Structure formats: C-alpha cells, structure tokens
Image (cartoon, rainbow, N blue to C red; front, side):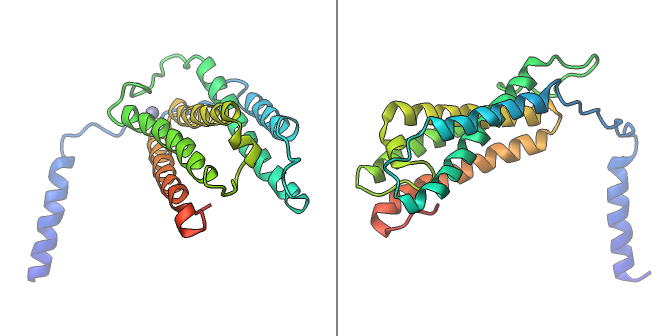
Length: 209
Ligand SMILES: [Zn+2]
C-alpha cells in the first residue's frame, strides 16, 4: 500500500466514523407559500408604483432626466410595496398543521443582530444622504426634493426597513433559513458600503451608486 493510499484510507475511515449510528436524514420539508402570496405582493407592487408615479414630484428634475428618474423611483417604491405585501401575506397565514419554524424569527442568535444591523444601516443611509445633500450634491436613486423633505424621506427609510425585514420573514416563513440570513447579511454589507460611499461623495466627487 502506498503512503498516499494509506492516507486516503485514514481519511475515509475518519469520515465514516461520525456517520455511524446517525439517524437517517429527515425527509425534505414541504415549503408552502402562504395563501394569496402573489396576489398581495402584486397589490403591494402596484401601490408602490402608484406612489412613485403620483406621489413624487419630478418638477425639479431636469427634463432629460425625468423618464429615467421616474423608473428608478418607481422600481424602488414598487419593490418596497411588493416586499411589504409579501411579508404581510406571510405573517397573516397560519402554519400548516404539523409544521413549525425551526427557530424564532426575532429572538435568534443570527437574526436578532442581523435585523438590528438592517435598522442601523438604514439609519446610516438617512444620515449619509443628508450629509451629501447638505453639501449640495444630487441624489441618484430618489429625487432631491424627496430626500430634502425630512418627513417624506424618513417615511421612505422606515418603509425600506420594514420591506427588508418583510423579505427576510418571507424567506423564513417558506423554510429558506440559509437564504434568510444571507439576505440579511448582504443587506447590512451593502448598506455599510453605500453609507461609506455617501460620506465620501463630497470628497471624491462621485458616489458608489
Ligand atoms: Zn428562519
């Protein structure tokens, strides 16, 4: 037996030891979508698009930029509305008989800090956007008039937090717990990068987004 083969046998034996005596893997869980999920998400999308179209003023946007700005705002509010609708449908639907979540959504060693992180980065988005707006630089995603209206901007940030948590809850409720945590961590990571870019914007002359 060559040295390589002995090593291979040792590795295989080591891998086999913990497998002995283990229970067979559980059957894959059914992943039901809550009732009326797509309908309520579509209603939220429509409501978000309507707010972006009718509830936001584009009068101060340069005429050549208005169409693209409408699309950006529409996509943003539409996504917020769709996530809120989907989350509402998920929260309203009872679990099917015999099925329960394997961990608490709010009080969980991963979710509790990650959800707090989502709230924190959205607050940082508010402060960092105000930072560059107070130095006269233009907003890219929403409109200048929207982010300069404190009440409207705070409402938008609050809706964004709720939408992000709603999306995480949909992943949780449909049994995608790994994606739930990846989404939350990704949101916090992107939020940190975005906030740093916003604070650097007046110095470097360009924002990341
Ligand atoms: Zn979960």
